[in-house]
Length: 110
Image (cartoon, rainbow, N blue to C red):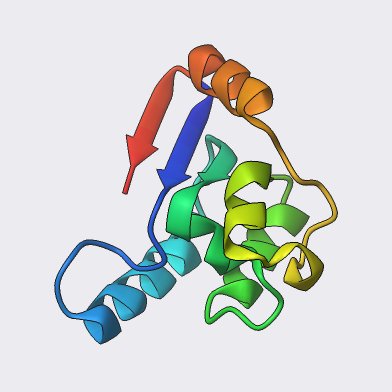
């Protein structure tokens, strides 16, 4: 079963920012143990998580090392001006994101 997690914010949920960041960090640490996770899609403010000094850079790096694809929206990266700060070499596009989402058996959006 192909599972994709979509993260479109730089925290989990709305409300208290510190709590949202703490929750997302914990979620990504726990996600490392998931057996059926294939891809994480980052778009809008979620792309900020893929910078080298992100508070979840370690967690995203571990997931990537375990074979989870991390798709980072190029349009969003350019909008936020963070292309030179990314920790990943591959920058995605809407065609790849769309294909990935359509091929997934399950899409989880945070």
